[in-house]
Amino acid sequence: MSDTVYVLNGPNLNLLGTRQPEIYGHDTLEDVQRLCEEVCTANRATLEFHQSNAEHLLIDWIQEARRSRGLVINPAGYTTTSVAIRDALLTCDCPIYEVHISNIHKREAFRHNSYVSGVANGVIAGFGILGYRYAVERIFA
Ligand code: CA2
Image (cartoon, rainbow, N blue to C red; front, side, top):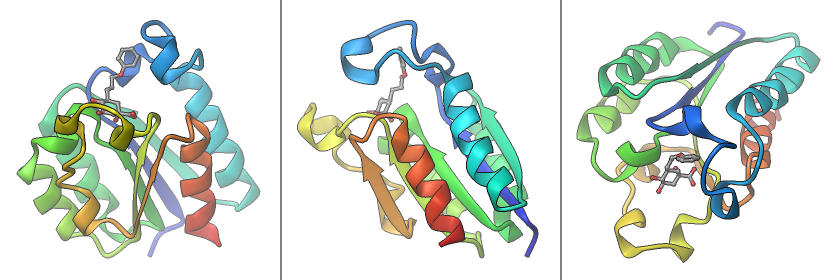
């Protein structure tokens, strides 16, 4: 097991803070990275923080994370579509936490059925970007 924590972000999350602030808030993905970095630094761990709009890149990072300390993932739009991301997560030996900035259960029905939740150790939704901090803290708890 390595002392690296992976935090992965799916499609369009690079736009965080620039659109739909009523749903996603005003913080940017750099702010999210800073939160995660603080927790990792306090626990003498290394952070691998990534975002991609490409499913295959997310899968490559999940495979890298297989023997890491833990993996936090906001699959964004791939949450409800990607069997391939679920399959990759199933190969992981590390704890997996799924994070959503918004409360997906309060939103449209098509956002409710996550392929990831059934293979995650925990799911956080609706806590804004603090959800990422809680998930990374849980890895060290
Ligand atoms: O609440 C979340 O974190 C979501 O994973 C965000 C996804 C959405 O498809 C999920 O249902 C819930 C959307 C990410 C798009 O992010 C944007 C952020 C700001 C502006 C535009 C898009």
